[in-house]
Length: 338
Image 1 (cartoon, rainbow, N blue to C red):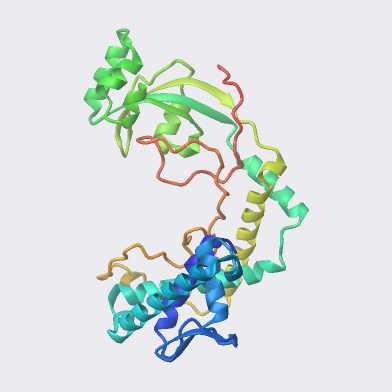
Image 2 (image 1 turned 180 degrees about the vertical axis):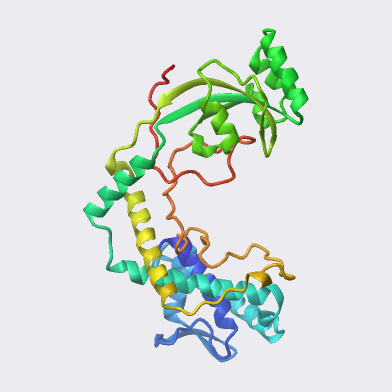
């Protein structure tokens, strides 16, 4: 369990514990002695140790000075007192707070099930090699280096093309006419694979030869683009050992997804789609069940690192809202003109 997840769980459990009478930082099977009590409810040593791990990045109380241990205990007591007051005022059972507590509970339990399930199901070498080959097969074979000029209307984009046809420089036009922040770099979007761009933009880029620009404006959700392909290069996959840990995360995520599917098959689930558009409450930053908590892998979601590490940030106005592909990272060989 990583330390950021421990911190999240520590504070979540503290909040959840405060909502139950006469329990302050205890578990059902926690028989460790109390390090403090709050209105008669114990804060146990095991819970205190767990809290310390979360706020210190994995240290134990023995690694701290006596003063640091005391400050940490005072902070935990203070949080417990405030949480109990919230419960007395009924805040834990009203509005968004109740929903956030329930979502936190679901996330903590999902993470606990995931860790227990995967404990004895570590990926084998064969599984990792198979996943590596799967990722390589899905990996784009070519990267593109392009620049663009983004404008609001098709007629204006067509005028830009006419000015290019008359010999004006693409980068100069981008700096003077483009609405996109890339204008400061002459419209340069850097290197990208087609999957990182919205389909209309990617399709236009792939149809060009190096040095060519689009002679018809390209429309996307961001506006109208004039695009120039600068150069292309082959994508070189990373060696297996370089992405081994990321492959472990991907394989584990797939295994747990299969387990979730099995649980769903055995559950009685009823859906009411016609009720989905009712007066839904706002969701102020609460992580949905299955969504990634800070520093934690989301149960059932792609494991962190499944996306191409080292890949360039998604370029704006041509960039797809979707996340980067789950292929292993591309190493950057010398550019190759087609």
